[in-house]
Structures are given as C-alpha cells and as structure tokens.
Amino acid sequence: MTDLHDFPQLMTKLKTVEGLTLRENEPLAPHLSMGVGGPARIFALVEAEQAIAPLVRELTEAAVPWFVLGGGSNTLADDSGFQGVVLSLGRAFRKTEAGPELHQITVGAATPLSAVMNFAKRRGLSGLEWAAGIPGEIGGALAGNAGTAQGDTCSLIERVEVVDRQGNRLIRHQGEFEFGYRYSTLRRDVILSATFTLTPDTPEAIENRIKQALEKRWEQPIGVRCSGCMFKNPQGDYAGRLIDQAGLKGLRVGGVQVSDKHANFFINDAEASAGDLFELIDKVRRVVRDKTGVELELEIRTVGLDSPR
Ligand code: EPU
Picture 1 (tube, rainbow, N blue to C red):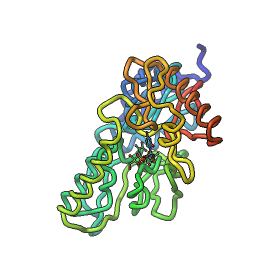
Picture 2: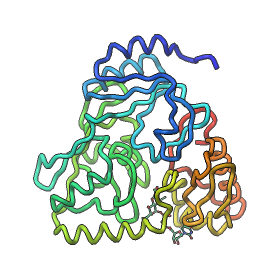
Picture 3: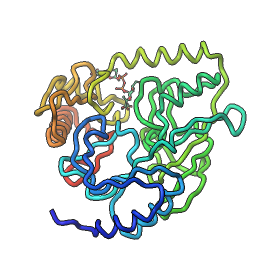
C-alpha cells in the first residue's frame, strides 16, 4: 500500500523532539486487550510531559491521523492496522499524589484506574469503588467516561491538565468540558493528569463497596482476551440482555465468540483476526436489529480503515 502521508519526513521531524521513543510498523495486537489488529505506521512512546506539545504540533502540521492509546482495553484496530501515529504515554505519566486540596488526589494519565482506586482507599477517600476490576488507565477512563451504574469517572473530576489539538497546554475545570454516558469531550485532548475531589469515609466502608463491585465482576468473563462491554446500553435497556434474548450467546466467527457468561463481551479465544471480530460485531448488530429494531452502538473505539464506526 502506498503511504497517503510523507511518513519518512514526519519521522525525521519527530526524531528532533526530545522524550520520544519512536517505532515504525509496530503491531497493535499486543497493545490491545482484545489481542487483534495490524501495525501502526508510527508508534510514539512518550517519556516526558514536555514532549507532548511539540509532538502534537508536528502531527497537526503534517495533517496525519493520530490518537492516544491508553491501557488498550477499549480500542480495536483492524487487520490493516493504522496509517497514522499512535501516542502511548510512558512511565512519566504513571503517578499518584495527595492534594493539592484536602480530599483531592492528582494522578497521571497513564495510571491504571485500579491503582487510583486503591490509592484513594488507602487515604480514606471514597468515590471510585465502582472501578474495582475495571481495566484501563485514567486517561482512557476520562476520554470515554468509564463507569457503572454506581458512578463514573468524569463526575469526580476537579480539573484535568491537557494538551489540545493545537498543541496548547491548558487546564480544563469541571464545567468546562462535557460528558455523559460513556462519552466525554476530553477525548479530543491529550490528557496529562487529573485531579479528583473525593469524599472521606472509613477504609472498611470503602473496602465493602469494592467487594460488592468485584462480586458483580464475577458475572463477567475475567482473565480472557476481550475488551469489556462491546456495545453501549441502549436507552432503557441493556445490550447484554438484548444479545442474550436474541439467542446469540456462544455465536462464533473464527477465533472470536460471544461470551456464554455475559452476552455483551466478545472473547478472542483462538487467535482471532480483527476481520473475525468485525464480522461477529456485524452479525450481532444485524440479528438484534432484525429481532428488536434496536441499533446497537459500539462502546469500543475503532481505529483503521475497514473497521465499523
Ligand atoms: N443480561 C442478560 N444476559 C447477559 C448479560 C446481561 O440478560 O448475557 C442482563 C442482566 O441480567 C441485567 C442486564 O442485562 O438485567 C444488565 O447487565 P449487567 O448488570 O451485567 O450490566 P451491563 O449493563 O451489561 C454495565 C457496564 C459494565 C459494568 C457493569 C457492572 C455498560 C455498557 N456496561 O454492564 O461495564 O462492568 O455494568 O456494573 O455500561 C464496560 O463498560 O466495558 C463494562 C464492562
């Protein structure tokens, strides 16, 4: 395939930005919890906060497609991969600290959601217990407003430090960005860090709520290659219930299957290709549409040429 963009020239420019480790044609499958997906044309591991603004300016100037990859639990790539630049935030973005105000914590974008929840618990701060057992990193959790019926990420935010698509570093306070069910306008930015305002409570009460959330997780497939829930719940109903009622549990295309345990989870249990996965997604959508009239919308973000949107 011929490149649509001048990637060699872009590589030359990106090599001048300090704090980046650059790889070409990096396979995405190992970075994504679903374990499928072809290579990214350029994979930029960002090792320093100062690298983000110049990097984003270069990408904007070159007009190449790019996205930030978080923990990889909510992103799917197709087999042809991604003809653009993937930004992955490294260790410099993995940190938790108390403050700056009482009952607040400030965390780096690449910190796992579970690590943030545990840090808050140890400090006697409540609000994130719903996150028990949910994979992913804070940046991704804010970009997609991860949550359950018990709570969500964006509601707890005091402010978020970001670099916008023009390369400006700025602070977005609560009220200055929009969010809703599995949606937030923070997805447009590169998130650097976030400050949460939480509620003091006893470690025992917090631990109990974490245990309840984990019990709920046992109803879902655990320790397998999957991306959590595949579809958003439609208004007034549940994607899992609709797929189950349509008799689709266990439906398989190649190496990917609708879970027998929870029908909104698709599992890669036999070296699936992204093609298998997207075919299964299409089938499930079609059958549910035919039987119920409901159009299921992907919760998972897709990148690449052939993937469904
Ligand atoms: N159901 C079925 N069959 C199934 C699965 C579910 O009939 O195979 C029914 C259940 O009996 C229940 C309803 O569907 O009446 C909803 O199921 P559940 O309580 O498991 O919750 P969910 O809406 O499917 C949501 C989040 C999950 C989160 C759980 C637990 C979404 C799309 N999903 O699932 O989040 O873990 O609540 O709180 O909002 C994720 O987003 O990746 C995710 C896993």
